[in-house]
Amino acid sequence: MAVREAEPIAVEEARRRCFEWASPREVVRVPLVEAVGCYLARGPELPEDVPPFDRSLKDGYAVRAADTAGASDGTPVSLIVIEEVAAGGWPTRTVEPGTAVRTMTGAPVAPGADAVVPLENVRLPEGSAGREGDRIELVIPARAGDEIQRRGDDLPKGSSPVGAGERLGPREAAVLATAGVLEVEVVRRLRVAVLSTGDELLSGPGPLRPGQIRNSNGPMLAAMMRMEGWDVRDLGQCSDRVESVVQAVHGALESGDVVVTTGAVSVGDYDVVPHAMERLGMKLLFQKVAIRPGKPMTVGVKDDRIWFALPGNPASTFVTAHLFLLPTLRKMAGARVWDALRTIAVLKGRPSEGPIPLTRYWRARVWLEAGRAVVDAGREQLSAAISSFLGANALVEVPPGEDPRVGEAVAVWWLDVPPAPIGY
Ligand code: AMP
Ligand code: MG
Image (cartoon, rainbow, N blue to C red; front, side, top):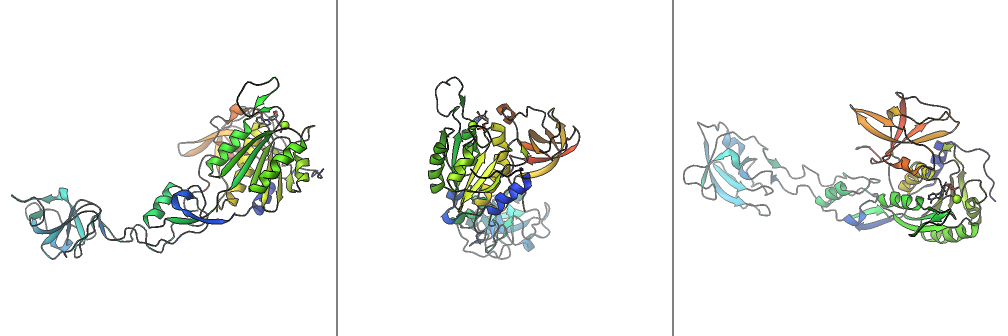
């Protein structure tokens, strides 16, 4: 049996040990859309200007702004239409004084022109359809640059608008695709296995035997990690025997990066996980954290594999997964910023319990009220209460010995927002 540390370590120290250990997995080159959810290993340099040519933002006429000076209702400027260009076409004529090129939205602006006048600002004289060979009349002066998107104005060639460590989502896919980046280098998806320990658990369908409860930690963890974009294998459940745990975890450690178990990590009669860790030669990063819920949480590592042994109470699993598991794994997946966002909020409601010498985390709901973050933790905080997850988009962090009152400012972890502000 591994020697248990006498005292639990502080939350921040435990997190620091995890992050210090974690390093990104291998880099792979994959088609853009297959990389969704992965973190970029390198911020690609854009190979093309966006847009790739000066293009019209409106259906209208490409003109020389100088020609239109002084145009008004009473003194219209008359131009002759020398060509028509649609999106996908290319102009063959140059706009000389007194001429215009009919130019549709997205079409290239003909050389010589420095403005596009929208169709609705153009008057057609008697008999003119505004097409090639026709005359048009302008009644408002155009300014150079009007309705033209210049080549490279949106995204210049050679720039790297999406950096290493950023997560590839729909916005990044659009930005890279538009500049001709069809493949990206990302850190490969993590391979994670989830195992729920407990003789009392039922993971599949069917009626409960007396004394059984349904496995909720397995589905919760699998859901959390699938939403992060990782390959998650749910190993279901195993019984509270060292052998069963060793057997189930052994293979998962061979074939994956991460094993997450829940339960059997405390000091009860059937808490076999510490023994299984020792049997598998895991080195312990820590073996108890000064936290509620989740105190018996233990993390072991071996080579480049990591085993998170989360306590089995559903709220303990929930809290420790958010504070330790997800950020550590995001770092392994290549994220530059791996933590959830932490802010200060005004406490609107709180549970009835007194201070303790551990860091407490209350499941809570955070929202904005008149521009200020407010948070309500006035719900059941029992670690066995799964109903407390409903609507819980935040954790209120209460330092050891403290006991914030309603109306006071508290530290809050936002669980449902992206891990970093724009421009971090
Ligand atoms: P343990 O950490 O194994 O001592 O479990 C603590 C409590 O959480 C016990 O009441 C277990 O029945 C319960 N529990 C453990 N694992 C799960 C699970 N996967 N789903 C739901 N409840 C669980
Ligand atoms: Mg158990």
